[in-house]
Length: 180
Image 1 (spheres, rainbow, N blue to C red):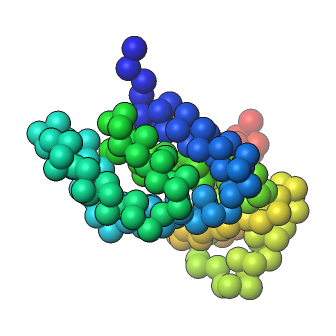
Image 2 (image 1 turned 45 degrees about the vertical axis):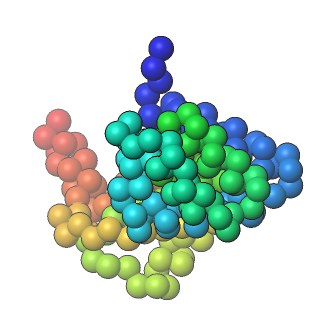
């Protein structure tokens, strides 16, 4: 049975996360994953090339060796395992899933704030702090998305959670009430 990319990514990320946690090097593992992400983002064809069946193992091995040359042994072994199982094309998804696990462990929430106008740095900080308190998180990493159709207010989204305090939504609710 062939597994979908997401399931594979979750399994690999969780296995590496638990191993790094057990070995007491979770911070280093996270830093290594972020370095690896940068390499894959800077070389968008790397994953597909290392998974391509048209290349021989002898052609791919030097690329993997170069990729892992400066990484600690634990990360080298992890990358080698992903390579051996033909999953290098999924590496960025694996990294994303690892980051989610790390953020969850550290109490960090990734969220977006949709507003009609760009938020100032002070507003971003206040909103981030208030949302962290509401969610009982250590830290909220907030990204501002400008959507002029909102008219005003803010919509904060974090994963499956949506807190809608936009004027547009409030006007729509008011209109429904008046029509009933």
